[in-house]
Image (tube, rainbow, N blue to C red):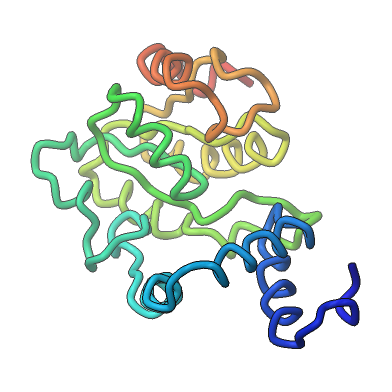
Length: 206
C-alpha cells in the first residue's frame, strides 16, 4: 500500500510517522494507527501527551548522563552505592540490563554511543572528557568497561584505556562470558551478572 492508496491523508501521515521509528515497517505502522483509531479519544490523548511530555521534560543526569526525571538520577543519588566504582556503558539500555542482574552496586558513566568512524562518531562526540575529569578527581578506585564486544566497542575501550591509564587506577572489563560480537543489552541476565562478578584486568586482554 502506497501513500496514495490510503483513503485519508491524515491516516497516511500518521502511518508515515510510525514507520519512521526504528524497526517499524509500513504494515506494522498501519496496524498501530488503526489500533489507536479504535481506542477512546481520552486514551489516545493520554498516549500522545505522554510522548510530548517525555520529549519536553526528560533530563540527563548531570553526573552519569543516564536518563532521569531529575537533575541527578536515582542511582547517583543512592548513597548506598559504591562511589569509587564506575561502570562505563554505551547507553541507557545497558544500564537497565546491568541493573537487572542485581550484581552491581557501583555507579555508571553513560558515554552516549561508541567510537564509530563509519558513522561519523569520534571521541569528541562522546562523554569521555567528563569521565576523565571524574577519574582525575582521585575519588575513583576502579573503572569497568561494559561496552558491547564489537569492533567499535573494543576500539572505544582501548581509546578510553589510553586516556585513563596514567591515573594509576584499576581498569577492568567484563569477562568473556559475553560472546564476541554480542550487544550487551541482548545478553541474558545470568551471563551478564557472572561477567560483572568475574571481570578481569583490561590490560591482560590486549
